[in-house]
Length: 137
Image (cartoon, rainbow, N blue to C red; front, side):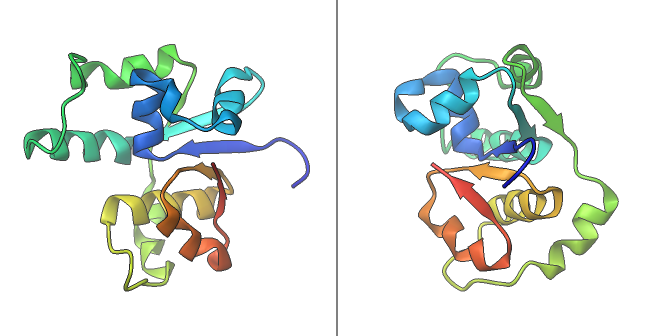
C-alpha cells in the first residue's frame, strides 16, 4: 500500500483500546500510538455495544456507554457514520457460511468500501481477504 493508510477498529479492538491495551497486539498498539495515523471507529460499533449491553452479554467495567462517542473522539478516533450507499451495497459482500455476524459483516463491508485496514483479532475476518479486506493484528 502506498500513501496514507487509514484504519478501522473492530468493536473489540476499540473497547480493548479503552479498557485493556494489553489485549492488543504490538502492531495495533503502535498504530494507535502514532498520531499520524487516521483511525476510525464506526457508529456500527456503538450500535453493537448498545445491543450487547442490553442483552447482558458484557459490561464496560464502569464506563457509561453513552460516553463512548466522546471517549472515542478524546482518543483521536474519527467516527465513521455509514451512508445510505454503504448500507445498500452491503449485499455485495459475499456470504460466508462460517461467519454470519451482521455487525462484523457491516464493519468488513465498510473497511473494503472505504479502503480502510481493519484492526481485528477475529480470525474469521480473513475469509474476506479475497474480497478486498485488508486486515492487521
